Length: 481
Image (tube, rainbow, N blue to C red; front, side):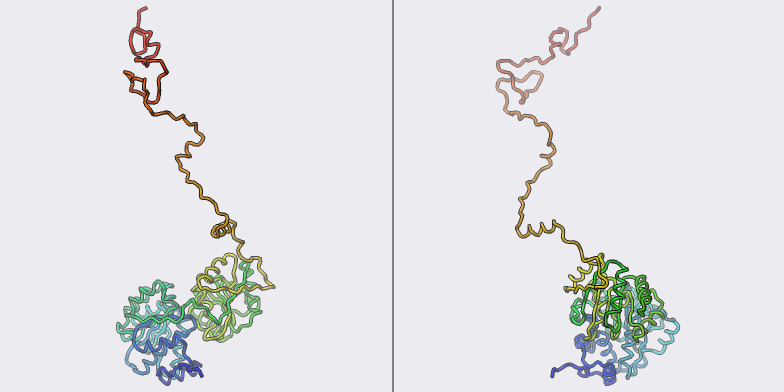
């Protein structure tokens, strides 16, 4: 029998083990095996792993273990978790509540869209763990309804996404109000993000880096396919066909904009497919209601923007449809990572139009994988990929192989081309004449030679001037009539 490292070997509190058993979690994932002991050692941590690997449980368990080992009922908030979106913050709060189900530890979610007065009343009850979004957390710290002088743990979850959304200034201001003796844990899909190094220097002290796999790791449990489409309307027909003919429990359809999300959701509802829409411009109560219906299975199809691509863990979701291709390879990984989680199988289908072909190929090269091309016989596309390569490309390839070699052209100077078409003058010898004597009024010329047997004339005046006795200026003298 293969020996596996179980949660009880970490020396966790019996109440936490009881909660894990109730959740059906028995064997830790690789990221949990690496992170749990590191956090318990008290050192600052930077950790990354692929989506669906269990990072939330990895940092929540050792924090809860510390709180159960050393209760501090008379202190303010002991742990603060900052998340980029409301949905992710609410999900983390739910994970925390599930883990403390049998423990005397309180958790509270503080996000935008809710009444500030109600949140202040809940914060006065002194919850040990607060999970929230940067904007609303900063507002509470400024109003001093959230005190962080006793903070023991600061967690930046999905830190790369938080920086991409422009929350760096809010995070630094929140950190400036925290206890300086805290332990800071930074979690990210990739530790190579351009802004992580700068913010880590501001908030962490000699952090330990833990990377399990990469965010570009191939998802072995996810089948990845592409279907070619002609235009936006053709994609809507294909999407509806897939939702009718594919076998799934829950499906997530990704669009590029909120307008497209509302349009596609309305189209599917009109076709008899119960669907819901989710994007960042919706009111908080609407977004919360949509997620509640989708989690409970009352709505099986969710059409969303990339808002739902980060961190959301929705059970039994086994189909992802990219109605519009992701903007980058990293975004694509996060999208398809909503399925195939925790060892379950899933399928990701991308609808590719003519304008998305180059983007799709670049994502393939970036992720070092190859998509399986699929054709819907009932809805075939006229578009079959880009045209054949130009002849010039073939010539360049043949030249590389050594065929059709051409001699290099001789270099032609501009000074040789500027006189093309002009009459050339004969070449004149530059040797001086032997018999020629220099004239008294003119310097000797090297370009002309005298005729044979003739002496050069000393007077170079015109003939008319020679006949006149008057002067040597060529004009006759004035005479009286």
